[in-house]
Length: 84
Image (cartoon, rainbow, N blue to C red; front, side, top):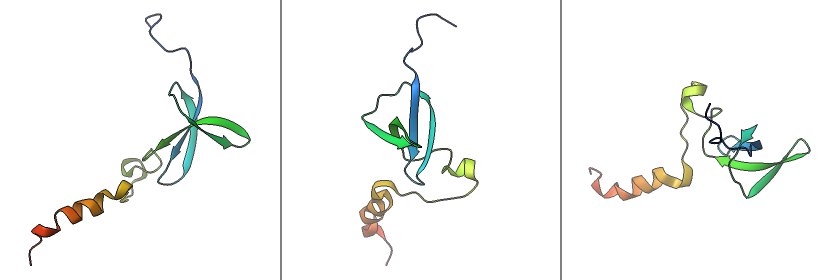
């Protein structure tokens, strides 16, 4: 490994999947402004829309996740082209 190119500030960070509220803790260098208390210990928090616990490839289940109303926005936009 090349010396001096890898970050030195690894720390434990909590990642939270917002679609199913699953939390996992791993080492990361990501900067965060929020924190979360997990089992009495405070960790920096990173919010995810999808992770290994909710992604259809890993779960084997097809699940529709509509974040920020994208599906409704699409339907409203193209409703005028609907056949009568």
